Length: 270
Image (cartoon, rainbow, N blue to C red; front, side):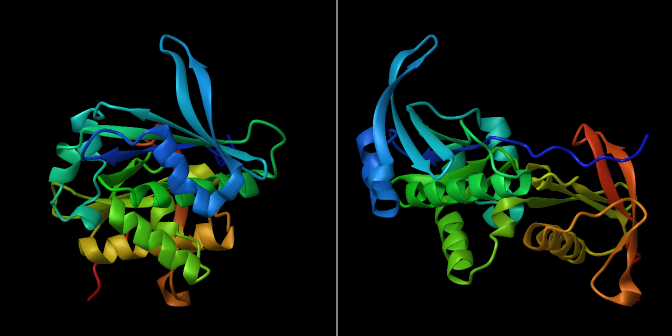
């Protein structure tokens, strides 16, 4: 059977975690109006089993962001598991001790643009809204469901603002790279989030590169996919230079539960 890239994963969703009670819908709306103006409104929406809930609604072009509050923490174990070591450096107490969260979902309720444009628009709206929420007092983290990654709130806001000012795609926020040690002393790596943009995620198995080298290499490939719109296929090669090209092959990934593209093993640099 021929390899097929996944359909874009929509909607964009995630959470902003708070160290105290969740901000009221009116406070969230006030935080978003400097960026979105009259596109922000508070509506009472009916939620099955909960009655009417005050929900912040932000409409940007064809995309709509919905925000609801919850005065309870997320489940600790999966949330801590999503804390990327590169971003947290082991200092995850703010996530472990958070008390409430805001649910953020971005979707296209009406006509949808072309798939990649839809994914980029939803991701951009998600990041703009999350950045504004991350600046509210008490915000400690932003959790992206699409990348299964939890970021420190202040670091997320800085990274997105820096990317916007540099007119760059915030690739490090829209996909994540995880490196795992193997029993034989090698390391494997995989991405999460490329499927949001209709591209198979990437894996490298049992590389002899150092964890830092492996992380940098896979991050660069993922960033290239997001910034260029490139679509890799099995049988092609990827690499930073003509002499460092590595083959791609399709394979099933138990981590992802679907087919991914495996980059041929990177031998340890001599």
